[in-house]
Image (spheres, rainbow, N blue to C red):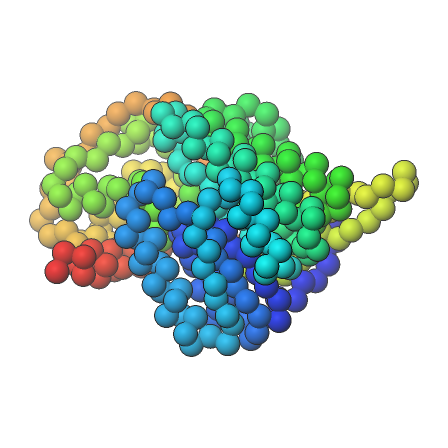
Length: 359
């Protein structure tokens, strides 16, 4: 689909889910790139994981905002609060909305389904309604590679059927894509969904394997390796993700009218993934090497004694593998950062951050 160029300067950009992992890094990028305008961060700061990490990311944003020509506003609230969402849109009139706020995690959705409906369905609906009633130039929103479920055809392409989710989390993300499509068709709202593939990096989510494994190894606990290590993941470093999101923000699906005189939905969905799925055991070995290098763990650490191979967990899939050709074609971008470089940055950050937390 053809793209309409979007200028960010001198406009208001709303980023929900900041100071979450991706959201915080995107806001930092915007504060560094834009020369004027306002960035509004929106987040509930819930306790799905240690809120101190979100507070840490927010502090990085606030420090960057002090040196930026761009105004930064933080709104603390829940996307399910329709009155608050409407108030934010009425007061700040965002031209571009990046909806990254969501309840994440496949396994957590099995025991806590209600929070996924509240955040990922009701919250996203509130965003769509606000975009409907305000002149938004581009809605960019987070989907997930989880929508591909147990698809055996690899790499995963956006044209593949994704009607058989294997977790509630995946079902909510597919629902986001369907809702966005209907609103694009009915109300001519340019929207772009992004299917993220296993995002990692410094100050990431502690529930992600590389982070939780590091915490367990540091304590001398045993890490569980699912499906007996027979998993492949398309790991994507945070800087690559942010670069992709930023480029997508600058190009909205073009509005057009069909033969029936009605809008052709200005709607698109893209994969953002590394494009080189890594064997989980190789990824773990690289992580261990970098943790030793960063002196998070001692050189003589007995890794074999702290590994346990276990079966597949409900909701998980054995392979994720992104076909990102469409993203490269339309936005000239392909993720480039490998796991060695990415895990080295994480290990060095972890040493500094967790050392500071302990002191």
